[in-house]
Length: 466
Image (cartoon, rainbow, N blue to C red):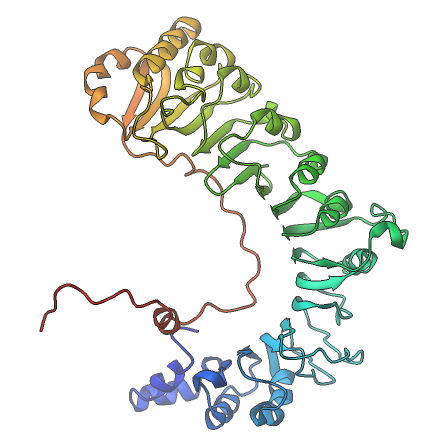
């Protein structure tokens, strides 16, 4: 829906022609936001929307700020709305589903802190349910009311290991699995379950802030196809994740490391792996990367906000043809690797397939007193070695210099003797980093008016136009 909940009312009030068109377009009235706390959609308007939507299945967004169990609006209309809905978000567990929900395809069910969970109704029939999200506030997981699910999101549910694995294994059409802050009731060993007995092939797997046991069991259990996108966000289980990741046995064509947000993105061409791990920081040992990433097929390597990498380490990337990174000169007294440890004659020897080198020279954010970066000498040494060794000029060198941008003017003629193309300007070393596919959204974005209202007051302007 464009605009907010009252947009259909405003459209129908423009003129007679618009009113006739709006009233006769049931899809315009089929998306309903019910938020008693903000005074939106009172009972009379709710009746109007239900009437004008005709037989079109409804998309319903609820707000948990109001007690759904006792509000008369819900007791009078909720069962009817659910029976006609194709999508419901923020439905409280205290609102019982009717016996049959024939058109319901997407359900986001929430256990609000003030609403205890009723015992699940085993007789609920959801023949069309494809997408299910449960946010259960540390409560036990109920039985899944459909076997044709394509999407399953579980957040803050309490579940035993065997129940989780058997639940997933019985959803034969499942494509997207998201587990966030899942609480373990029992250990897998206590249950006597072999975690590798069942394997599940999925299109997308998102594992966020789980206990270490979950990574230990799920990573080797889930059968990754060549098209399975894997997203992991963890604060405590780095070693377990890295230990099991190599079991994917997928070649990696590009590696992107963003030390600012502790993320590592691996492009497998047919799918992506994105890891948010605490160990991915500026001191990240690249030997660890080589331990679980097959580097022989990597053609592109990019990192930002990190330290320089010795050219000998880059020699492990035998197929590398694109190298992009940011570099900040080390503060006085710091023993970090210098730029010429990366850009030197060894790089020309160890990476003969390079066709692109991007370097973003940034000022140090740690100290204003730094060693000289030596960028001019390092690049000239590399380019001279490249030309002598390969008997051709280097294809493309791109530099963004935030430290002393004027220094390159006098070197242009010298560099053009060794480079086919030399670019001086802004660089985004992560510009080719692929975006991880968005997981299914069960909640709509808040209206612009609500987002604006939530902004804190920051004081009056210094001048006024009266």
